[in-house]
Length: 336
Image 1: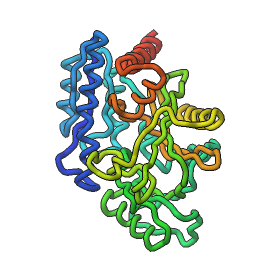
Image 2 (image 1 turned 135 degrees about the vertical axis):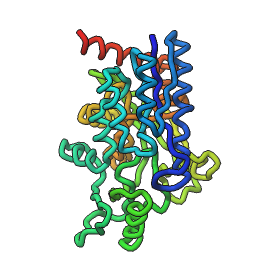
Image 3 (image 1 turned 90 degrees about the vertical axis):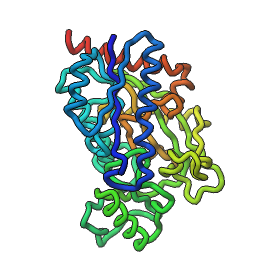
Image 4 (image 1 turned 120 degrees about the horizontal axis):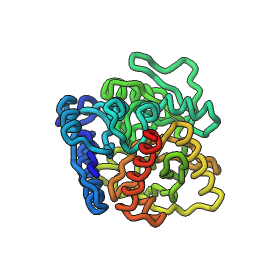
């Protein structure tokens, strides 16, 4: 079976943000190679197809290969995270079955404010928030509780998040909002900072979703702020990376574990996630507050989703096989 393993490339100089932001983009090819190796071990015939600046070249490569299935690892288009959904839509237009969530789900979850609107409307816990578009300033009646955290509204991978993202007064808040507007050229999401333990809840499945063992992000002493900053996630030589350690399975009471997993499943069902996803949360007073729903998380062998699968008893090739099997079953049902 021919499988196209598609991943996105990025310009040498980021279109916005900081130069260091390219570190997370550069890992896409390594992730794709790991998936391709697992597919070969499983007896498939994978081909790596990078998505660069020229979409026509990408389409031509797919048409020449004529794969039976696309393993979609694309998290944007040429440095534009918001175009992640367009890549999945392209596969759908070309009639190519692809792994992972559909285009609509990728678009919804890429917009943090819209995701939180939907979560709130359906009674799922998420920190109180407001969105400040470029060119606008804080409303006169600011009602969020201090401290708050400021993020780019349309990025993932902790882009734009540092210790300075958490602020405790209006002067610092206005400065951070301007930073997001000027450097990332998009709306700033301001939300109440939840002081508490942080968890990643991985979910796998299509029609029937299953919650994998919960992982905790354990913050060691020495951090200025107990958050998963960009450096803490990607810069291996940083003190923040050394002080940000994932532990799976997390030490939770039965009630806490069930609460975290149930909220993750509800969020993924609401937003239409399929095959695999990850929900990031903070637990405060027994309530798991949803920080983000990642419908296209990193599935490298050392990333959180694969770690959760191992804790559930599945090695990496088994995880990849399960994703392929779900996609094939979905395709056969649609063609029946």
